[in-house]
Amino acid sequence: MTAPSARQLTILEQARRDVRDALRYTRLQWGTEQRSRYRVRLNRAMRSLLDHPDLGVPRPDLFEGCRSLPAEQHVVFYRVAEDRVVVRVLHVRQDAVGKVTR
Image (cartoon, rainbow, N blue to C red; front, side):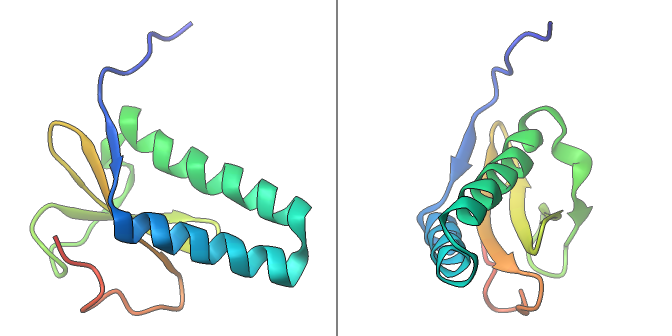
């Protein structure tokens, strides 16, 4: 069994809104059950950053230290410091330039 990570996952308010919007859309389009499954998958992807912070692709074009991790039909944008900070969670079709900032 693995010891729990001492690192913290901080999800900024804008990222929380992004996830709420994605889950609301999922519920309206595909129902409550699919919304629940999608929520689990998004949360699992974000939690994976605690133990595997280099999982994502470096995105220095957005800001120094930015990385992105695909999660289903969304992309988690984050930075690694003492903790992991999720900055935005955007749909794969959204352009991150101008939306993802420190």
